[in-house]
Length: 209
Image 1 (tube, rainbow, N blue to C red):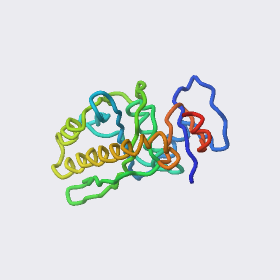
Image 2 (spheres, rainbow, N blue to C red):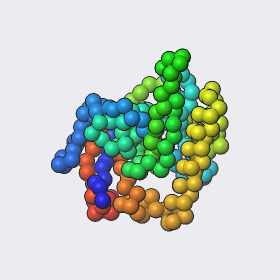
Image 3 (cartoon, rainbow, N blue to C red):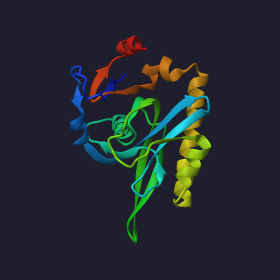
């Protein structure tokens, strides 16, 4: 079983030193070329809601970006969720699905980018580091509509299917007895808490719960 990590977000707090300690500024220097996305959600009186952010082109999307050399994809996705949406929460180490984005750098060329989607349960939001992202909560149906707006039909449908798959996974996890919390060692989650990343073993995670 791999290690569990916490990215601590409050820079005013004194970092807790551990052998696997990594500074946030070091994480930013490790960005690679592979893409990752954080599918952020919360459960409330209105049911499952998803957190979307604005792109520079003003479209709605999931917090996402390049993977990080030296980090797992989940760690990189957690960093994107924090920077773009101010997310504090728990993100699964293993991607629950993947989708493809086709980029067209030239008129006659296409590049397929595979994006690994990681489910992230949000506990609270802080002010994002990136401006003009406008993180906003939507119901599943409204999130699918926003994701389809101003996009190629096929790509919009792919994004909407990510929401459907996320809903199915969340419902299954909670039918199994809130498995995201009670079986965190099986889900291999990363806790997003402050500006450092520290390894947290199963015993420490049990104490935190």
